[in-house]
Amino acid sequence: MKLVFQNLEYFRNKTAIIDCRGKYSYSELNDRSVCIANYLLKTGTKKGDRIAFLIAPEFDFVATLFAIWKLGAIAVPLCTIHPVDEWQYVIDDSQTKRVVYGEEFLGQVVQLNGPQLVSILDIEPITINPQHPNLVAQDPSLILYTSGTTSRPKGVLHTHQSLNATIHSLVCSWRWTFEDHILHVLPLHHTHGLVNKLLCAMSVGATCEFLPKFDAETVWNRFSEGKMTLFMAVPTIYSKLIAFWEEQTGVKQKELFKGCKNLRLMVSGSAALPVSVLDKWESISGHRLLERYGMTEIGMAIANSYSGERRAGYIGTPLPDVIVRIVNEIGDVIETVHEQGEIQIKGASVFKEYWNKPQETKDSFTEDGWFKTGDSAILVNGYYKILGRNSVDIIKSGGYKISALEIESKLLDHPEIDECTVVGIADEEWGEIVAAGVVSTFNVQLLTLQDWAKDKMAPYKIPRRLIVLNELPRNVLGKVTKNEIKKLF
Image (tube, rainbow, N blue to C red; front, side, top):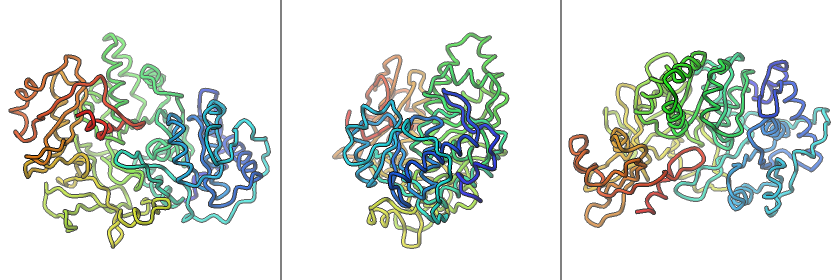
C-alpha cells in the first residue's frame, strides 16, 4: 500500500477537499503541496526536521501536511484554539524548526520564540517536483500531542507505517471507497479528525468536506442535501445534534430523519458514548452509531461491527491486524469472563515512541512489547467493555473497585440530569468516595438523587458529593477533564 500522499496523482480528477473557499481536486492538492514543499526546501528543511503548522481545517492544511511528508520531514499539527503558551510548549518539546501558519494567526505566532515563521500566503506557485528523499515506511512522519489530562502533554511519534496500518484497517473494516463523501467537523491535531476522517478519505480518493466550525443546524442541513455518506464525531456533538432536533416541529423532524437516508455509516469515538445518546440518535436518524476505541498512541484498535451487531455500552472486537489482551494487576492474562483488567495492545499501528522521552516510552510497554493503555475493561461474549481509565475512572472505595463510567451511565437516566461526570474524591475512611458533577436544568439535589439511586445501583456506588454546573469542563475533543472536576470538590 502506498503512503497516503503518494496516491494524489492516481485520483487527480476527483474532488478531494471542499472548504469555505471552494472545491479542490486531487490534482490541485498535489500541485499545492509541491509548491509548499519547494518553499520549505528553499528555507533549508531536511529529512527528519520537525515542521509545525497552524492552519484552520481547510485545503491548505492538507496541502501543508503532504508537503512536509514529501520532504521526509515530521509534521507537528498545532491546535488552532490553544493559547500561545501551549503552542510554545509543543514547539520547544518537539524542537520544531519552522511554523507554517495561516494569516489569521499572525498576531499570535509572532509571540512565539525560536522557530522560523512561514506564512502560507508567501508560498510561491512553483510546481516543479522537489527532489524526494529516500523515504521508507518506517521513517517518522507525525508527532501528535496527548491531551495532557493527567500530566504535561507528550509527543506521540508515529511512522508512515503505523499511520498506514490504521488507515488500511479502517478502510477495510468500514468499507471506504472513492465514492464516499465525509463531513468533517473535528480538530485536525488528533487521531480522530486527522487519521480516521481526513487520511482515510485521501487514501481512497474520497471527498472530505470541512466546516469552519461545528454548527448543529448546518450539519443537519448538509445531511438533508443527500451528498454525505459518512459522519464521525464525538458524543458531545451527537448530543448537540439531538438537542437541535428536539427544538424543531414535528414536520421538520421528519424532514431531518429523511435527510439521513443516504448516509451509510455514522461513528462515535474519543469519549464514552452514553447508551441514552446511542438510542436517541437511532430513533431520530435511523442510524445506530458505531462506537470504536483508539488512542493517540495506538491508532484504532477495537470497534463494533460495520455490518453486524453494534452492542450498546461496548466498544466491540479487535480490528484487523490488532492483537488485544486484558491483564490483571500482576500482569497475568485474564481468561475469566467479567473479570476486569488493563487493555494491552500489539500491532503495526502502535506508535514508535514518546518524543525525547525514553523512560516514559519504556514504562508504557511491557518487556515483551505490549502497549499498556491504562484503560480498564472486561470481555463479555467476545465484546470489550471499557470501565474507565485506571487512574481516573476507576474509584477505589472501601475495598471496592468502582467504574465511574458505569455510574455515569446510570445517572444519565435521571430525568433532571442532562450531562454528568463521576470522579473519586480522597477520603480518610473510605480511601475515595464517589462524587458527581452534573448539568441539571432543574438543579437536582444530592438527597433526592441519592433516594432515586437506591434501587438502581449498589449503595457504595451512589454519589456522596454533588456539584451542579452550567457545563462540564472539556478538552477540544469533547472529553471531560476530570481533574478539573476534582478541583471543584
